[in-house]
Figure 1 (cartoon, rainbow, N blue to C red):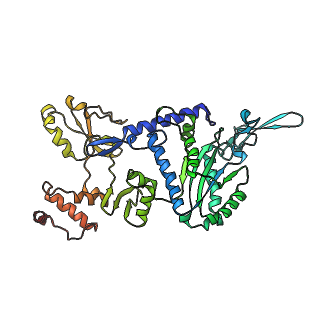
Figure 2: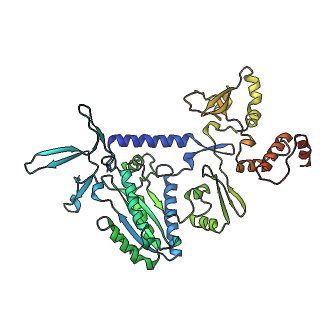
Figure 3: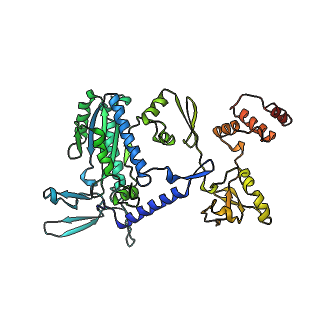
Length: 463
C-alpha cells in the first residue's frame, strides 16, 4: 500500500481527525418534528455515506457534460504537474516493471543540503535562513521559505496559481462565461506531491488558441493535453474514483489515500461556477437537478434568500411556495422542544407526583442560560436517554436539558414572519399576539398601525 509521503505521526493524526469527525456527526443533528436526525444520516463525504457521495460526484460531472453538449462545446483534457523542486522523490525507470522511487536532490523542502566536492568531501548545510546569530546564543532558524513552503498543502495552492495563469490569458478571457466550464481533480503522486487533471469545455473555434496557451505556459513534462477523448465523463470519472477509497461495503477500510487528503486539508474536486451553489442543491435533497436548479434561479421561478450576516441560506421558494427553511437544533435539545409547554404537557403530572421536592437548576453553557429538570422516570429513560457532554457541568442521563424559548423580539425577520403566520389564534395570549403584531409593523414586515396595550384585546377579538 502506498504511503504518499505520510509519516506515522501524520497518519495517526489524520485517523484521530477522522474519528473526531465521525463522533461529531453521530452526536449532533437536526430536529424534524419530534425526531432527531444525526448529521451522519444525511451528510455525505468520502468516508460517510460513500454511495451518496459518489452519486453526487457523478451527477456533477454529467451535469457539466450535458451543459457543454447542449451548447455544443468541445472538450480538452489537461493534466498539470509541478516542477521538480516540489517533488521529494523522483521515478527512475528501469523498464516498465522496474520503476523505482529515489530521493530527489532538487527538492526544495529537504532539511539538509548535501554537497559533494571533487575531493569527495561532504558538506552538510541546514536548508534554513538564520534570523538571529548572536555569539554564544543558539541561532533562530527560519524554515518558512524552505521546509515549510514545499508541503503538499502549499503544493496544491501552487497548482491553483499555475492554473490561474491560464484563466488570465486573453485567449480564455475572450470566451463568454456561459461558454466555458470545467471539472478538475487533485490527486497525489506516490511521493505525496499533488497534481491535477482538468476536463475543460470551450467552443470549437477557441480550441486552437487555448491549446497554444497551455503549451506555452506549461511545456512538457509540466503539462499534458488531449483533445480527442471519446467519452469525457468516463475518462474523468476514472481519475475521480482513483482518489476515493471504496467504503461502500466496508466503512472501516480507510487507506493512506484518504488520510493524505485529511491530514493536508486538500480538496479533491473543483468545478467552474456554471451552476448555483452546491449547498443549495444539497439543501433541496435531490428535488432539482443542478441544471434545472440553475435554470429556475436564472428565470426567477426559484428564489434563494440568505442571511446578510452569516451568508447562510434561510429560505428557498419556488412558484408554489416555500420548499426549504432551516431547522437547526443543538444536540442539547434532543427530543425536547424549545417550547417549555412540550415538556410541561408530557412530564408535569409525573414531576408533581415523584419530584415534589426537586427544583429546576439554571446553568450557563457557552454564555447561554439553560434549565435542567431532574427526574427519575425509569419508564421514560429508554425512550428519552440524553447524553450531554459538557466539561464545566457534568449531567447524568436522567437530566433533561431545555433551552429557553426564543422571544419574538429576539427573532430575525424571516423567523418572526414564520412565527407570526403560524400563531394559533385559539390558544395564544392576546397581549403576546399584540406585542408580536407591533414588532412586525415596526420592522416594516406588515402594513398597519401600532396597537396600544388597552386595545390589544379588542383587536384580538376581531380575529
